[in-house]
Image (cartoon, rainbow, N blue to C red; front, side):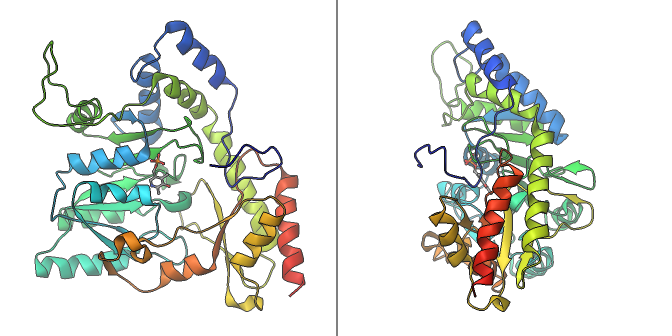
Length: 381
Ligand SMILES: *Cc1c(COP(=O)(O)O)cnc(C)c1O
């Protein structure tokens, strides 16, 4: 963990609105300092409204939400779970918790979302071989939103459970619907570096009321109704604290402003750095309204020796944090044995890409500082 340093510019810092502290004080006054309580219920209702989903369970993390989604999908040893190779480990590690078999697919070069043409081709082949996946995880990476109507059509045709990892896309929309809409399960994260935060936390959303009831049961140690503790299965300790939920209720009140600010920061970067030869930014397909959680820039080969690592080091020398894109999962040692379908789109994006500081509390002046350092470096080549 970083030490708190007031002079450091972080990739994505927590950004409180103002109501959070009063809501936390309300929790203290009520003494609901527990992984249950009225703020948890209120947070769940607010999240259901935001995502346009019937039911929500607030949980301790996005990773926990994915674990529960896979368990509720009855994923177990030997089952295949397919997903995009460019993601964060928490968006796939639960596949291993359940002893299932991850299969990774390449992504679209423009927005790093799962390549749906490739997916369709591979599903067709898998059906012929009798090796269709039990579940598919689509990841709304960097706040971009997958084409949900197309995924839903593939689900009808091939019969998998669709889990939308929307951890990075809270406040993102496509065709007027919140990211994840239409999936069997939606995973949300409120980790400290996400667009809004509860310090740590997550949620599982679904239109299936029974599944969310079951998620609540499993997230509280699977206690059967009895005065003593009776267990016919095992669960987890995955509920969100009522204290953290209060922060979440406050954060949701400023989500719209947070998205607007991140989008503004994105366009400032694009205006300045887009003018440099070889610099490119991720696209928004028609109808997509990305939250621009992190602005990613790609530095192509036209830049005469300037690469993303040189830029990262130059920013670091000025106490500014930046980071490579997610390293593709099929290149991670832990997944050395996993199957992979696709080419080198994700690998190439990883080699050329950099996430720039994108926090909503950044000033225009901060963005200017980042751009000036990169421009100076580009000029010196
Ligand atoms: C953050 C994140 C998660 C996990 O969320 P946590 O709350 O940190 O457990 C999962 N998938 C993706 C793509 C993420 O960015």
